[in-house]
Every structure is written in structure tokens, then in C-alpha cells.
Image 1 (cartoon, rainbow, N blue to C red):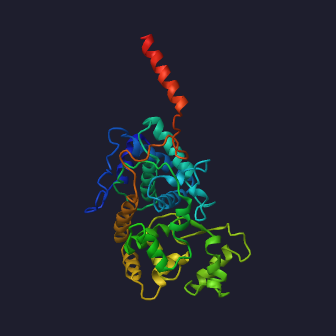
Image 2: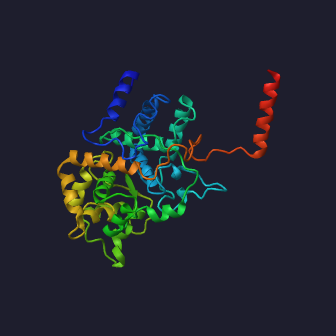
Image 3: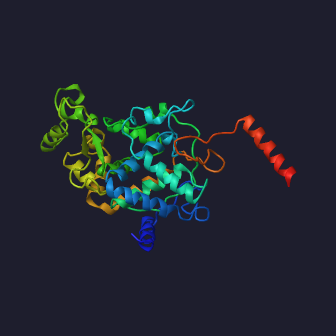
Length: 351
């Protein structure tokens, strides 16, 4: 891909649907880095484009990583922090352990951005922008990604264990988890549409296949033919590490098929099928609407992604811009500061 085609494609990444707001957070701005790091979008796009050609799962993993960041003390890159003597990492929380992918990709993006624009772009913004571009790379919608976030100084493993919706959540639990983040029922259905691509480990569905709700029987909301297919991929006595496509038809494309699958009882996770199979649920009409019209789904997906990206953001003088996404910036000790001051005096006296 030459530079002109890359720029043209990058511009396509930031098409915005008419009438959609840039951001509900006045301090965030799609053009936040237009002067300090004008090449940001093209850097992120090119690296993700190259990676997605060899790892088709990565775009879905990046969007999931963004989701798992925002639902825990806001979109502040806390999920990227490694365990240290002072940080209890969210990566070790039950919903994340051995299942998060894409952290190394965000690190690679940060390295490239730092080389071009040192100490200008936060890891939180890189992750949010990467999620938006991941949508485009898989056939989904593009939007102006509001930017200007700063990175947290802490992580919150306890909140990660509590706040992140589980694969076996019922509709009441799902609604509460989203409402706790300021997201409504339409946001719940729209953001669940990210399960139209990517994979899930058998560990998260094995109960549905063999012992749903301790009944010793499969989940009755599963299509019987689909059930047999899943049982073949996830044997009863397996280790649970096999991976199954969320969407058996277009597993690497962001489209409306997720909702069509729910209509025929082919939602992979219980929490997904709950959106359509819960009797009398107000989510059923939204599922039907998105299943009938992909543009309607895309418009709502964009709105909800922007809304989620605004949760609990740090701006201005709050937080920091990490030099490395996995660690908070090292603060100078009093001794380091004294040495710096002495070196500064020596420099002045030598002039």
C-alpha cells in the first residue's frame, strides 16, 4: 500500500454518520492531536492493517480490550497496567485472566507513536482509536473518535471482577451492569453486536451445552443443530480452551449477522441469547430492528461506542501520559530531584 492510498483509506476510517455527536464530553475532541501528532491516525491504521492481515481475530480482540478497559474505572488504560509492587493488575481478574488479547499490539502502537510524537498521546487514546479503526478494518462503521484522554495511575482488579458482564448473565444482570456505567438498553444491544466477530473459549459455553443451570441438560434456547455443532467443537470432557466462532457465517466481519443468529437461537453466549429469548423483553424489538437493517445497527453501534468511550475519562491535568502503556511513569525520588537541581546549577555556573 503506497502512502497516498494509505492516507485515503485512513480518511475513510473517520467518516461520521450525519447527526451523530462528536462527543458528550466537551473536553474530548476528534482533532485533539491535529497539531501535536498529526500523523497519529495513519500510524495506528497502518500497523493495525498489517496485523489484521495475518491475525484476523485481532480487531475483535482490540474492541473487547477497549470494552474491558472502559467498564473498570473508565476509559483510562488501566487494563494495560502490569502487576507490580504497587499495582494489582486488572489483567489477573477472572474475566480477563488468560483471555485478554491485543495488549502487545497497543504497546507496539505506543512505541511507534512515541517515536513520531514523544510524550504527546495517551495509551487510553491509542486504545480507543484502535478500537474505532478495528471496526473499519472488519467491514464495520467508522466515526470521528473523540480524543484527549489521559492515563490512570492505578488499576482496580476488584472492580474488574465486579463490573464486567459475565457470559452467563441473565437480562436483568446485563441491564444493571450497563446501567451502572451510564449505558441504556439500546447501548446494551448495540455493543453486544461486537460479538458478531471474534472467538470465545469453550470454557464460557460448556455449561450451556451439557448442564444448563444444573439441569443436566443443554440450554433449551439453543437451536438443536447448532447445539450438536458446538458439542463437537467443545467436547464434554475437554479442557475448555478450544475456541468457537461467535458467528458461524461471517466470523471475521463486523455486520448484523449477530442479531440474525439470535433470531434463530444461534447466540453463542447465554448472555447474548438472553437479548432475544427472554420472554417479553424490551430488547427483542431492538434485536429485530438491527437484524432487519444493518445501517440502523451501525448508527447505533457508533453512538454507543462513542458513549462508552466517554465513561470516566481523565482529561486536563488528571492522570498522566504514560511513556510505556504497561507501567505508570517513574516519579523522581527526592535524591534524583536533588541531583537534577545540582546538575542544573553546575550547567548555569559553566555558562
